[in-house]
Image (cartoon, rainbow, N blue to C red):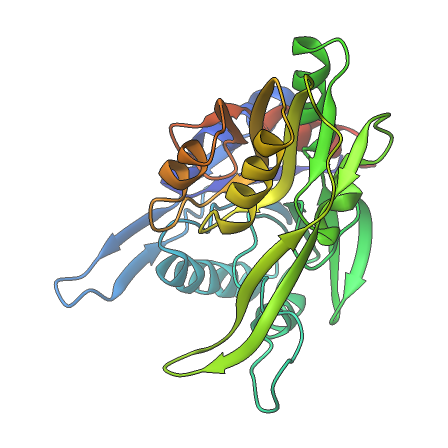
Length: 296
C-alpha cells in the first residue's frame, strides 16, 4: 500500500484505530462541531501530507447530518488534491435505487454520482442496491462491496450442527450462498400508496418452511422497521423450529423493530457494528482491514 493516512469521524473511531494498527498507518480524528444555529463547523487536520487518504465515516444514525459532514470533508480533500478511499460501513438512501413512480428521485444514484467526483473508491458492506460481493462500478463510482454474511453464517455453524438458513426475501438470497439447508421466502408488495411520501405497502410474506425441530437463522442485509424479519421469524416458529435467530449486517431498528422481532418469536438478534446497537455482536473491523491488506 502506498503512503496513506487514515482520517475518521468520532463515531467511526473504533474501526479507524483498528485499521491504523493493523495496517501500520497513521490516523487523525476530524473535528466537527455544531455552531449555535445548528450549521456545522468542520476542520481537517493538515499534519498529514500524504496524497492517499482512507476516510472512515459511519453514516447512520443521523444520516442527513452525517452525509452533509461527509460532503464538506470530501470537498476539502479534493481541494488539497488528495486521493480518497471512502469507507462507509452502511450506505444510506440505498432503498431508493430505482424508480417505481415517475418523477421519483433515485437517491442512491444521486449520492453515488456526487461521490464519484470526489473519491477514488467506496468501500462498504452488503450495500442494499449491489446484492453481490466484490468490485462493482455503478453510476460512475467504483465500489467494493464487502459482505458480513460468511462471518454471520459461521456463528450459525459454530452453534448448531445442522443450521437452517432462511432468506426473508429474494433480495437477501445472495447472503446465504453455499449453505446446505436454505429457504427463500417471497415478499409480496401491495398497492403503491402516495401521501406525504410515496411507498409500496408491504402485504405479506409467502413460502413453505420445512424446519420442524431445526435451528433456524434468518439472514438479511439489514433490519429497518423489522416487518420483513418479524414475519420470517413468525413463519419459522409456526413451522416448528427449535430455535430462531434473527441476523443481519446492518441493524437500524427503526420504530421499535427489535421489540417486534422478539415478540414474533426470535430467541436472539445478532447484527454487526456497522451501526452500533445493543445487538452488535460482530465486529466488522477485521473484515475491512483484510480488504486493505490485500490492496496493492
